Image: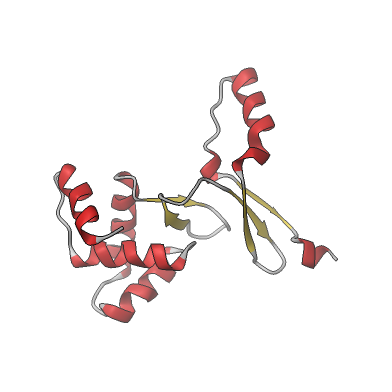
Length: 138
């Protein structure tokens, strides 16, 4: 997302575009899946004075305005990625740490059953499965 588009989205919500906000969003886009610490390290390459609490607040703000989303790929910090990415389910290998993305259709049966049986709507973008990848299982 360009700075003009980002500025427009923020202005529509009564916010302004700051260098830190732009750097954090650019870091999320360039890293793919990234923890706040990884985003902070990327931002610090350009702006050494940005502290980790600013990164956390900015990620929360960017998620509130719909520009990034997060999922939990470990027991630690959430992992952020651009909201413009297609929705996907994460497969996380507990052995090597590899993260694969698969189409949300793999969840369609379970999601339909949950909606029908208990009225629960699954947010597929937050679904992660943990196990072993093909290479580690071999």
